[in-house]
View 1 (cartoon, helix red, strand yellow):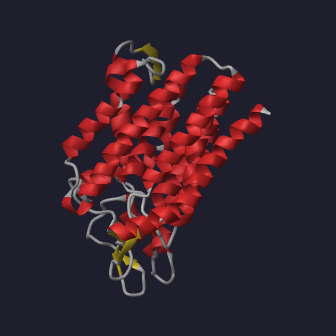
View 2 (tube, rainbow, N blue to C red):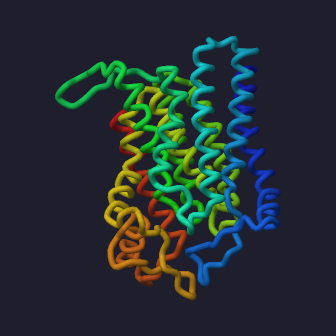
Length: 336
């Protein structure tokens, strides 16, 4: 009986998104909250923006329902509920920051880089003040080291800010951000379950189901874009799960695409866009002479491999997803 009640939290988040996004699309278009689809010929400005806020709301509702089940039916310990509320606080703070950045507009640079990083550090405070996670960490050659107060004061803010800002780098293609979130959070939920944090697995899967509901409208050809309100919260949730579940090394391993993306973005001083250069037939060309992101690298590789030399938006998305799945499979055998 309890298992069924917990499963309902997944369906709540999924159906809230699935049935609310069409309404959001209509309202966004009616109010002018529409963005250009940069990888399409002519770059049509016809896709609803900031749909991620619907996902965040559905996630919060699903998690609150799960907390109610824990409180009234499972009679679970309150300490875990405190950790869940701290994680929700981080997600909501970053959702607010993300929607502000969306409304200011990415073409006008939105919030400054320094402001984004500062606010990401601020958003980590709920996890800092409850001293989330374990300060004992294993290091190569050193073994287990107890970092003490340095862990909550330094590493938690660094983890939240790092994952939040870099998850936003690998983006700009239909279905990419939502699909990556589904893959990574599904695996981390499995890790949480296998390592004894079943409550954390449930929280992660609530977001996965919300993202699934969103993906149906965000996949190619996208009817709605996620915006920073979603990418920031996904990054924060990944870091938050790693901290609360004490599996930072596993999360860092599956986060390799974003580490590589950051390195390539730094090559262009964080000013180069991730989009391809669309042709009239919908195929994509390299937008720059050099590679400034995994998206560009994907276009380059696919042009070498495909006999037709024609690379389309879906091809790029699927290749990056394939790379992510490969890392997840490797992580499964190495760590689990």
